[in-house]
Amino acid sequence: MNILIIEDEARIARRLQRMTADFFGNKPTQITICDSLQKGLEHIADHVPDLLLLDLNLNGDNGFQVLEQMVAAAFHTIIVSANTDKAINAFAYGVLDFVPKPFDQDRLFQALTRFVNPSVKPDAGIKYLTVKTAGQVRLISITEVIYIKGAGIYTELHLKNGQQELHDKSLGLLQQLLPDGFERIHKSYLVNLQQAEKIVINPGTRYGLLLKTGEVLPVGRSKYKDLKNKAI
Image 1: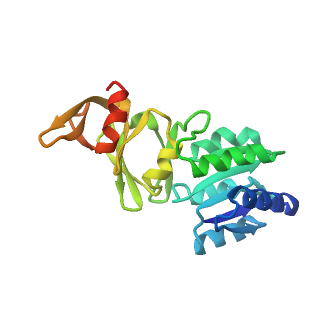
Image 2: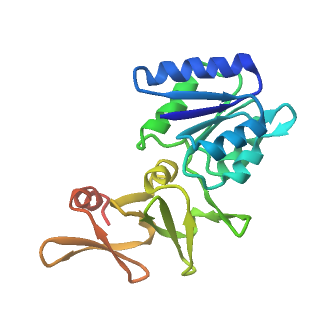
Image 3: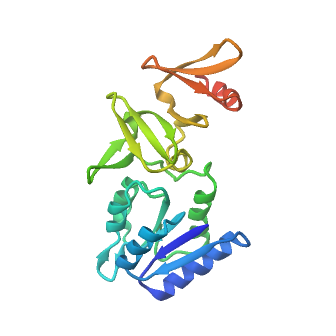
C-alpha cells in the first residue's frame, strides 16, 4: 500500500502520517510526504500511489492542479483542507472524500474506511465522472451512463448518446464512488439499474440483464440473487 500526502504544513503532515499508519496497523504501508505542489506532482509521475491525501492550499499553489493533471488517475484522492467552499468542485473531480480542517481521528478514519471498503459510500454519491480527452477535461453526468465495462486496468463508459469514453479508474475504484443505483452485475460490468428492463435466463442457466437499449449484458452467477432481489 503506497500512500502519498501532499501537505505544506509539517505539523499537519506528520499528524496525517501518524493517524494513517495507526489506521492501517500491521498492514505493510509506505507513506510519503511531499511539502509542495511540484514535489507532489514529480512523485506521482515516478511512483503512482494507491491513495493520495491532498491539501488544496500549498504555499499559495492550488492543489486543484493535481486533480486537473491526474483527473481520471488510477488512484483515489481524499482532500484534507480548510477550503470547504471547494468541496463541491472537488467531488466533481471524483475525489473519494473531503475531510475539512481541523479534523480529528474519527473523521479521517471514516474517509480511510471508504477507501478500504467499497460498500461504504460517500454521503451523496458523485454526480459526475471526469474524463480527459486530447488534453481537455470534461464532466459526464452519471445519469448519462448506461453501463461501465472493465477494459484491463481501464474502464469504458457506455453513454446514452451511443458514445464510449475511456476512464483510467478500474471498476473496483469506480464502484466505490458511484451511488447505490449502480450495481456490479459481473466481474466486468457495472450497470445503472435505471437503464435495466429485466433479467433473462438463457439455456444452460446462464443469466443476462436486458437493457432499455436492447443490449443484453452477462450476469455473474454469484450476482444473480442480489440482482433478483432488486426487483428488476
